[in-house]
Length: 285
Ligand SMILES: [Zn+2]
Image (spheres, rainbow, N blue to C red):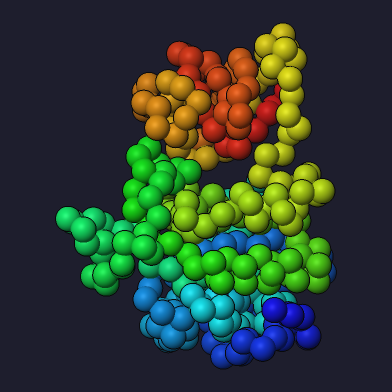
């Protein structure tokens, strides 16, 4: 698919512009937006998402909604602020709407299973072939999620690439990362890390893992310290999502001593020793 941006509107075969009044004036700096925030709609269709985001009673919106068949609705020009992120924080910035383009992907979200039936939160049924099973980055146990379609994922990657080139996007985050504890979209069924690697690989200063891989020996000898950047960070017995938490989650701004690093995890010491996801620790010395 060939997309381009003309006067802050996406152009392409399967793109439709349907305006919503739910927006603020333009970004306050010329180099903004510089961030993409990825969401799922938690609804049943592109149409229902678009009508919700235009409903005068719903104070929410996004720049784009991407359907399961690859159709795209744009609701707000990319140079205006949409209302998608809510209370949010990323790398010292708060209120991420004023820095970002919001992309909603048509997906029902987390599912509940009873027998062989998978149900959405609104009571819809999802066939087993459209179910993804896996752990969320912010949660302990694996769960069932509505799978994204291949067409939709390709479409998101292409659109994000066009936006990166047009606006100099340097950061791509999931809603679940900027509002952890409050939001779980786009969830583990969406290849968010792959999107980041593919689009921002050579711009690693703003990539989610901000510090270069330090060899274990340096971390061990230097005893670096870091602070927790998530509102609540699981503290586990081993460097795995499935590992048991060893005590209550660590609160934001807790200072930890980093003992070693292993595949995206840090072994840290607070009052005991355990493992935390590396991307939620900011090195302070
Ligand atoms: Zn969201």
